[in-house]
Image (tube, rainbow, N blue to C red):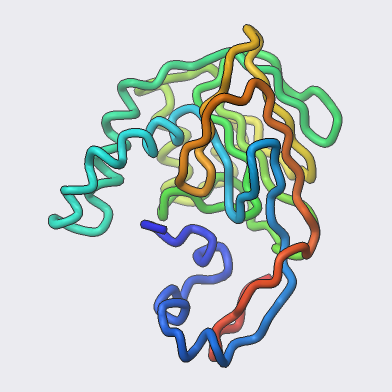
Length: 216
């Protein structure tokens, strides 16, 4: 993808994954992935601000000539002012944890989104658990402290201002029964009223390139 989020959760060294020779000589390891109502994701699925960024990204890809991250930065600025919170019912590991307005909800196998945002504590990729972030009803400049905390990796501040928790199962629906638009590893999926998801423990064979030691 544009920002290689999942590789960042493994400890970086993105260039090693770009070389076919390293992959062919690599080690196959069984890791977790996300299985959902709408398909399979490796890193995250999310809605709200982040999904609006993905929607705006296609219109901003031309700005890549000014730098790899420029399309994403422009799309983020647009989504920042265009996003408004919706009312959701959210269940984690079978327990209702939040009912109310939210402007950003993320369920991740990893903890990196958009190449530079850390939305939770680092997760193991082999234990069948992921991370949930629920941003409360704030929008626009009210979200600035949370965005700053994600940029800096300041998880203590992030956890004070939002609901952040470990999870194996996740479910979300709009209170009005409307359809949800989800960002699926950087692709948009539409037309589903309730999303159910779970971390599948060690269900995916993944190639670790030769010379790379991952942080599990």
